[in-house]
Amino acid sequence: MDGKLVKRLFKVGALAGLVALYFSLDESTRRYLVHIGKQVPYLPYRYFI
Amino acid sequence: MADYDAVVIGAGLGGITSASLLAKNGMKTLILEQSDLVGGCCSTFESQGYKFDVGASIVEIVHPMDKFFALMGRKREDYIELLPCDPIYSFVTQDGRRFSYPTDIEATTRVIESIAPEDVEGWKRFSKLGLEMVDEMMDAMMTSPMNTLGEVAAMAAKNPKVARYLPLLVRNHQSVVRSYYKNPIILGSVAFQSYFAGAPPELGSGIFGFIALSEHLGIYYPRGGMISIPQGMLKAGREHGLEVRTGCKVERLILDGRRARGVILEDGSEITADVVISNVNAKVTYLKMVGPENLPGWAVRAIDSYRLSMPCPMIYVGLDKKPDLDAHHTVVSGSIEEMNRVWNLYYTKGVIPRTAMSLICWPTEADPSLAPEGRHILNFLCNAPAPYAPLGDNWDRLKDWYREEAVRELERTVMPDVRDHIDYLEVSTPLDFERRLLSPQGAIYGLFSDLTSLALFRPHARSRVIRGLYLTGSSTHLGGGVPTTIASGIITSNYVLKDRG
Ligand SMILES: Cc1cc2nc3c(=O)[nH]c(=O)nc-3n(C[C@H](O)[C@H](O)[C@H](O)COP(=O)(O)OP(=O)(O)OC[C@H]3O[C@@H](n4cnc5c(N)ncnc54)[C@H](O)[C@@H]3O)c2cc1C
Image (cartoon, chains in turn yellow, cyan):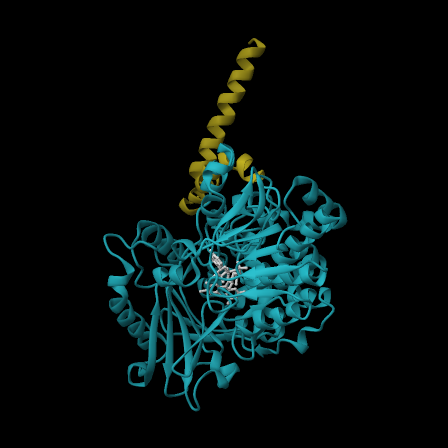
């Protein structure tokens, strides 16, 4: 297998792992993560105000 | 030359603290307050012989208040008499069970043992860590500026033990308390405090989980009502030349490019100053008083992105008899799931919840002089939180219905015969609260507080967009609360004094 393919497989695996981890969490924790995730794009702006 | 060295908009705790400290340091300082009363959310109004607290009903963590008086060269005891309230809370569960948490940690252990022996070990771990945190971090956490990464790094370098508590900040409130307790009744009794920071247990930062411990350092009620705190602090400020004008609403800032030069009042008159400190909500400060047209696009985006804190209706009750209560505060508690459900299915959807959590405060237990002879006061936060804009309706129309709901809730939970003993009853809805304090949408703690709007990410005490503008109070670092807003005033005054050299 070439290096590129290994890297790609690794990325796909990591992503699948994250998705699996997310769905293994209870609904309330998922809401917390989604809530925080939605705020993250604003953090660089908030830091400077 | 400017009229004043500093003008402070709003006589809330943050405004009074920063203004007094500037006056103490020789700056000619003026506070402008739109209401006739000082103290904002920490105030007391009089009606038909009763003295009702506008919002705040106790103070815990007196460290910042004591620090303020020390910085003023005074002693707190000479200005404010704090009456200890013990037990801290009496709880009424949804199925009618009652129990109380005393201040004493050992005595609380026995209460927990009688309800949930399996949680005693968790309580011991919780109180040990909490007390260590208070010992190691209180001063650093309460009065260090945290506006920039550099400041946070400096604080961490001085207090390396802070690393131990960082995970608490990142986790949510419920996951922290669940790592100590299993019993749903005990969990309910340590989770509802997330609403004191304005968020449900699933969204609030885990660090607020330790409010349930800091209460055991003592909770206090000031003799004369909550207004005695701002009044006592103002007295110390006035002794150093601080001026205060009440009934004086500020409309806009005077700007010279991106430099604050003073304020324009409602009547159009102008007061110039080298420094302007705003104690009003940061959204109002930037979007109304400065104006989006005077801000760069990214700054408008930043300030727009903050959510306001939740509103909460208050019911002020005068009684012709002593209520059958066990403590200054009675909490009608529910489970963590119920608290989250109320937030997700009611509050955020614009529906007023029928059951959730209520906080019943009995100030005449500590200070009988607040009511006419033989009478009592209950300040009742009914089923908090409630939406500012109830779906398809409006609080002015709902007021009578809500009054009846509140009486029914009191009958159901703590006082079955309350209806026969009501001598006075007033409902303050989120709309009333907005009108009284000009707090947008009746927000009780300024801005919503979660991990992404704390410390570095909360509007800064020293504005980075408008020179000469400083902010203080609940929408800045440390958020809502009596001790936290006093601490924010200390931080803000330190910036001003440092910048003046
Ligand atoms: C219902 C409720 C219960 C609470 N319970 C507790 C508690 O038990 N314990 C606790 O520690 N904390 C409690 N808090 C929180 C605490 O009271 C507040 O966080 C704190 O008092 C806010 O202080 P602040 O400095 O942000 O100023 P604020 O209290 O917000 O005051 C701001 C001031 O600015 C004035 N103002 C507004 N606009 C203008 C204008 N345009 N021109 C001039 N003046 C203006 C307002 O009239 C007000 O006086 C409670 C709050 C509420 C609302």
